[in-house]
Every structure is written in C-alpha cells, then in structure tokens.
Image (cartoon, rainbow, N blue to C red):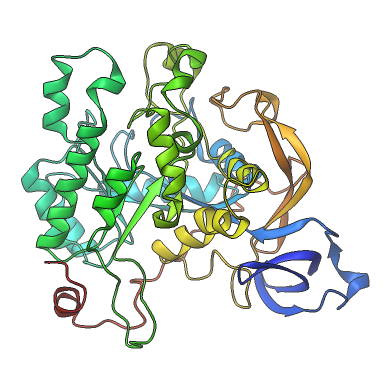
Length: 453
C-alpha cells in the first residue's frame, strides 16, 4: 500500500511525500510522485501521526453499560487516537492482580478496534507483586478512590522503592488528608479539592522521587505551580551517548478539559462539570497555555458516565474522541504550533511510555496516520460520538479542521466517521522495558549526574 500527500508531517515539518506500507509498518518515505497511480492520494490534506491517549477509563468489565472496549476504542479511533492505555481504577476487582489484568487483556483483544495497553494499579498490599512483575507502567493514587487503590504513605513508599526506577509510575496527586479536612469546611467540589490540595500532592510525589532517585509521571496536573514543582530539578535519563540528552526524568500530563474549560463553564454544564481534579479558574487555564513547552503530553482522562450518573454527581468527562480535534482546532487558531500539537498528542506520550514503534512517521514505525482536512470544520454532535456516555462538555462547539480518515497499521480504519474495521482489530501495544539505550548503573547516574538529591 502507498499513501501520499503534499503535506506529510515528517520530522516536525509538512513535506510532500509518498509513504510505502509493508505488513502494517512504514517502509520508505519517497517523493510525492512515487507510485502515483497506485497510492491513496490525500492531496492537500495533512497526514499526521496517530494520536496516543495514555489515560482512559474504558469501564469494562465492571460497568460495560457505561462503556466497553468496543465503544470506547471506536470513539478513540474516530477521534484520531490509534493507541490508548487503560487505567486500573473503577474496576471490580481493580486491575491490581495478574488475574484482573489478564481478564482485561482478553476482553480488549476480542473487542478493541484501536491498539491498547494497561497500567497496573498499586495497592497497599501488592508491592511484592509489582516488585516481581515489573509491568510497563503502574498507577498510584494519593487521593481517596473508595477502592483498594487509595495508598497510604507507607504503601506509596513500598511502590516507589520496589518498582523499576526508570519505568513510569503514574501518580494522581491530590493530598487525601488535606481533602478530608477541607471537606469538613467546604461544600463545593472545587473548593474541597482546590489548588493547594493538588500542589501538596505533587510535593509528596516529588519528595518520594528524590528519596528513591526514581521517575514519576504526573497525571492531569491543572496549574503552572504543580508543573513547576514536578519538573524542578528532575533532570534527564542517562544514555551512553553523552552528546545526546535523554528523556525527561519526570513527565507531565494535562487534560483537554483543564486546557479548554474552566470554572466559568460550570454554570453552562448545569451540575455536570464535576471532575477530579476539578476545573480551575480562567487565570490557571491561561497559565497552562503559557506552560505548554514544559508539558509532555495531553491525555483525555476519558471517564464516560451516563447522564443519570452525572445528575447524581459522578466525576469525569468523556473525551477520547474530542482530544485530538480540540488540539488541532487550537493549532489552526494560532493558540499553539502544529508541531507542538503533534508532540502533545502523539510523539510525547509515545516517548514517555516507551512505545518504540508509535508516534512518528518514519521507516520502521507503525503505519498509524490521521488524514486531516484543515480547510473543513465540524460541530461536536452527539450523533457523531461513539462513546456510550451520550453527552459531551463540548457539545455544539464548532471546531476548525476535520479528521477525514484514520489509518491503523496500514489499514483504513475510519473514513468520514465510518468505522471500517471490526472488533478485535486492535493489538497490544509493544512497550520497551526502559527508555535508555542500554541499562546503566541507574542509581549512580541519577544521583551524581542528574541532581535528584
């Protein structure tokens, strides 16, 4: 198969090119006129790397009436997300055992239309399992989740000390003790889980990272203060080539709703604007836009709840289908550069979560593409959204540009919002054991070269 366009995103620039695809991978990058009669021609439409969403809650198996791996992955794929990682929470049982993880893998293999992977959940009891299993990524909660995933200080320390120091330990940074104290004084959700609660949680995680010279991935940060704390003094991972800077030691993720919504939207959302962490004031949102160069990725925190659930206060927004379109809309509107948008929804997450064949249009990478028409537009319409949630905080928004098609591993998976692949087309994402080129004396290098003490 060949696909060509006058504007292919190659090494941060749009260039005319023809891409050859072999067994789901990119072969060679040719001139635009190469094999012209046999190529799928996108003309002036952009060909971009497939989106990667590292923070989703697909709800299966415990609440498949809200979402399952087919509906959730269909939403992702139609929104340009070709690969996603699913969180361990809100499951019964939580994904904190080999059995629960295996069951999720079985369900996703049978139903998902996009490529998939999982984070293992950390509990106060499974520290020995994490030490033995060393999964590609682990999720740790410093806040109350009303489940075994709520870590005590000692449980968090066991996880930090026993898990590979250069694998991403994903942390939900809200200080549980402070939240409980504020709940006795305040009624509003955004006052109980205010910015002080978030900053305190980041401080706890940073202190533990310094103590064990380890890497952290900070989930859904909402303010510049949190980002500055998370990044300060973290340094970069070591490589044998001292001329090249390694990957960031700590990585930071923000969500589309914290970037595009604020407390000013709460009245419009009529009680459905609750999420964890809460929406912030406009000044904090403006600060996030100014901090984009320090942010490694945008992830949706896709949390589908039915309207009845939102009426009773369930926190979270569906968002995996609108994540990439919102960023591209902002790029066309001049809020950020196209290369920055691609970094945030593709290159950044692929690098941070060691997806070695994802996130770039280059020989040897998976042939995952978004075909995007910047001259068109679309309005967020519930009839076009694939999630079972049946609502969106962006309903009625008119967005610049339109995703015309999505290619996954060389196959036309979506065209004009029509799903062209069947359940089970998605495959497990292959993640490398670590980010460095070779394993070093990691503690020595982290301590002496990268100033983590």
